[in-house]
Length: 517
Image 1 (cartoon, helix red, strand yellow):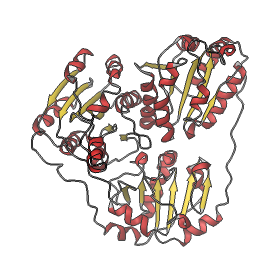
Image 2 (cartoon, rainbow, N blue to C red):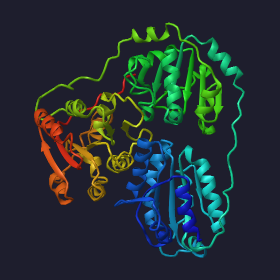
Image 3 (cartoon, rainbow, N blue to C red):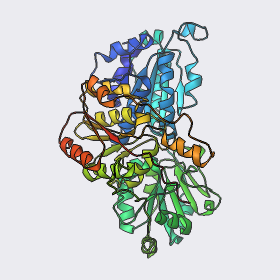
Image 4 (cartoon, helix red, strand yellow):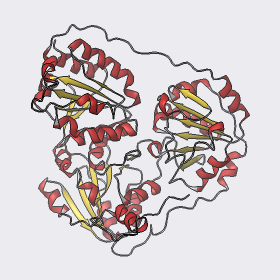
């Protein structure tokens, strides 16, 4: 058995069953082994889309996927999307091909120091020089993968090397923490607040049970929307620069803040100093821990070691606070449509579906107006926010949830960043409703130019292609609407369809509401 065959076998053993990628010369030994396996390979049209699809796959299924690219340009095309996943701590395995070991330090065709690049945007980047080292790296990667993307760079020659099959090296080790001080602090608390990040996903069921039983207020970061049902009273929704009044009040008045599986970035907490003495911070990444009580380890360990109490009238006090919502214009029927009215109409028909978002002016309304009853019901990149995330992430989501209709809400600018993946959608007959809100501009940038830099709009207006003709070229049915009634009619007409559909919605150029301080 050669290394390529053994790697494919290990992917099957670890149930990494879904692979997004593009074959190329230096990774072909792996593809030869892959062709004789039961693994599901999805051919994308750009390597960037492969990593975004892995991102969407994990957020929809809770399971990591694999992205594969060949040497040089192929591997480097992954970097932006891998960086996106790294910022959001999304588990995935990245396999890249490379030139033979002997030519690594030469200027041979397509040679490039890939490890030096990927080590900046992954939990760990491996560059094995032997087949046995590669297998040990794989074992280490499986230990690390829950922290985010892990990369293994595979030289073509070692993929052919024969290897003896033997048990993988174990890297498991327990985390130790003395919870006595934390438990005492929780016991004394009368106004606890739990802040959830995506790193709490593994403990979702336990957290839901505990917080509902004791009516503990819960706020979430962007990536954690839906970890607690946002329709429940004790769910305060988003916290941070898009948080509403209730989460802001709870944060400012809590006497014990328990942050689980979140980095607590500046978008969540503007200044850590004001809360550090009452902060319990739990994360598997030791480098991001803040506050007085720092717990390095999985959220599940923390949940299993501590006990909570009833929070008395604390939640009732919070619920007295009136949440002012960003609802201006959501029922407007004027023409052309206001973007928030279009999004609200989409939610009237598909509010319970899985929504995939992108970057741009539409993102604000998509996020704020969406009530998520479960994790993965709203997919977007919270930490990096690249344009072009939406379509390939929707591909990954649809592969993960083949019996669901996935709703993609894009702007016209970001859709064009990766619209070649219409081929992947068509080829796999994916049940994705792709909605393009077309305002013919980079709206957020135009707003910033005008309001922050006091300048006239410059290089932000778009001359767009005919999206309907492009959809037709890929054999995808489509429609274009300009009014709320037309939009509602089309949405209802495709509700029960299982075929891909592209819907262009012409919307007004309108500023987004700024975050509330």
